[in-house]
Every structure is written in C-alpha cells, then in structure tokens.
Image (cartoon, rainbow, N blue to C red; front, side, top):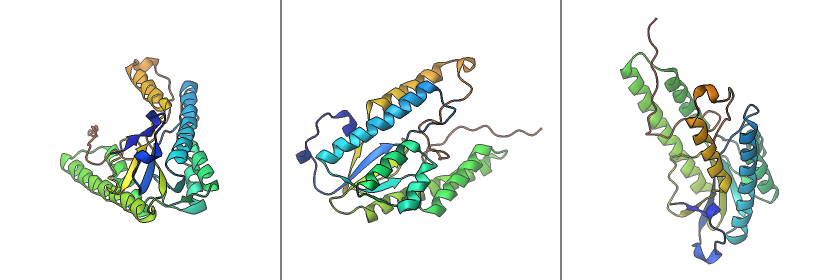
Length: 237
C-alpha cells in the first residue's frame, strides 16, 4: 500500500525501511483550449509536485530512475517523448535527469499499442453483443499483460536502495512488487483539480464551456483493466 507523503509535513527518514523506493506522481494533463482557471490549477499542481519531490529526496533519497506511462524509449529519446505528452512531467523529469537520474523505458511498445487499439475498438461501439464481449475480453487481457510488464520493468531496473520516480495516471491497476515501498505524491492542488471536475459535472450542459481541459487521463489511455465502461452501440439506419 502506498503512502501519501504529500499530506505529511515532516516525514522522518528512520520511519522507512531500507530497500527500493518509488515516488508515484499522478499524471494531470491540460490543453491550450482548457479554461484559464483550470490552467492555473494545473500549473500550481506541477509546482507543488516538484516541491514535494524535493522534500522526499531530502528525507528518503534522491531520484535515480525515472519512469513515465506511455513511454517506451529511454534516455534522451524518452525525455523527448514526454514533451509530446505532458509539459508538467517533462519539466520535472528533465530537472531530475540533470541531477543525475536515468530515464528508463517503462512500456513494452507492442503491448501499449495493442491496448490502445482495443480501446479504440471499444469506443466505436458494436451491433453484436457477442462481438462486444469478445473485444472487451481481449482488451482486458492485453491491459493485464501491459500492467504486468510495467511492474516487471520497474522491478528489473530499480536497484536496491534506489529511489525511482513514476508518472502514471490515477486509477491505474499496476501491482508493484512487494519489495518496493511506494510513496504517493498528493499535493493540495490535486484535490482542487478533483473539486473543479466535480463542480463542472454538476453544471447543466448549456452552462459548460465548449472546450474542457484534457484532465487527469492520458492522451489516449484505456480505462483500468476489469472495469467495464458503458458504451452505446451503433444502430442500423
């Protein structure tokens, strides 16, 4: 179980056991079309994340490995790939690499693409319930395999007594190895963003802006494996 150190003011180093550490940062996205009030919260979120990571590094250990969801490249290629996904996480990852951290490839490219393709199929809708069930089963299997590959990659590359940094969407279903102690970074701005979305959901459709923020989900990510979403099937004309 992860610890939300973003909510603890003064964690003491002696409280944490020796071994592998993983700082988990929820991915929060934005877009040029997002409302200004959301952009302000988004910018404050990433600023607070950077501050929390500095606090963790001073008490637990500096970041030695960096992992980012949806990125299957390592080194400079990996950092460049993050630029296209998230300016906030890219800035933090670049700073950590300048301080000596190594950017590791997280994803298996084939598994990532398979999950995304099945997701696209599910979003199209179906005429046949049988086909819909079959496609969903294939998606769940691919998503499970992807989660296992992510956990395996972190376990293989994160060395004993090292601290890693993982950027990953909220609601992920990755099960980390038991010997990795996970610390969830949860700055106050994350609650503000959640509240902003809840308030938006309560508004009448006509009161909502035409262009919403990209939100906390990835550019094109599937829902957690095993959690089926409701979809409308196409009807014959």
